[in-house]
Length: 308
Image (cartoon, rainbow, N blue to C red; front, side, top):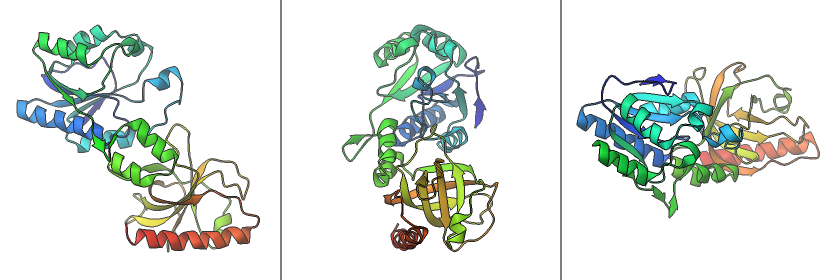
């Protein structure tokens, strides 16, 4: 998949355009993207996903909407759904001021040469979000452009949405997250040096600093799976997300202990998948009490992992 980062991109051919932010590339997004890829194959033209690199609200209120996927993961997941071209556009002042009419005529018709457009049932566009499905449908009818508006994806009676998934992550509802997202939620990041306290307790760990730019799972301990280029295969473990109140660090991080592993991972880029919530983050009166609880966490996590 080829990726471009400017709204000035011009296509040399007709395209099928998928519209959306696609943060998380959840099951609802997948339906839109797959429809675009399938339609493009049927028409014999490239499929193109037009997406903002972050939810537009973050332009007006920075970091107000935490991301479900950072750019590399988002691009890889969109590519996996059969999209040929990705136009990942920064939402800036010029985009914020682009009228709905200019978006339709200048971007979709003239620049992207859309032969067919695919979007979700609630897609909005243009300055102030004034463009809606009715306006898009009327435009496509006038211009002879095909239009597919995908209906909501409903799981267990709930419409799949990024906001619903963010809430479930914040509440530690990983079963719900998995059903809505279509996979386990994960974080990625470089392993940084720590205090080596856990190693001294008999549980070597690696630390990844977390940013509030991403969706932070509920503070607590999780059964997890770890993968990365430095590991020959994915490994299971437990991860504490939070500020580690027992040692008073007050740094937001994910601290992971991999079962039966003692290798050096400092500086490595690893992915941690969240499988099950074990317990909330809790301060302990002593390090011995913490050690005793970690032993219980490990046993419980192994029991859960054996049936996952």
